Length: 103
Image (cartoon, rainbow, N blue to C red):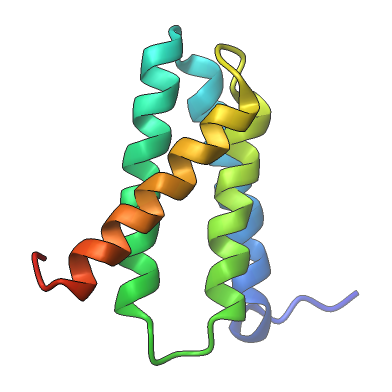
């Protein structure tokens, strides 16, 4: 197995963010913070997605989904479905604000 960083960087970054998201969510000690951080991370992911709107989206989707899965997998407090909904709501809000030129 050869590792070509210039070609495989989306997969490496997605895996790294999966681990980071997992560790972050393990350290959170309340339901409110779990949902709040999911919303904030969703806002950042939506901004990231919008800024790269002209690029090919598959690699960025892989990175965002990697982080979201890691964060959700480590979310001990709260419902995982609601955590994903908060993340998706953050993405939707960020994209809406960009489209309306609020940001």
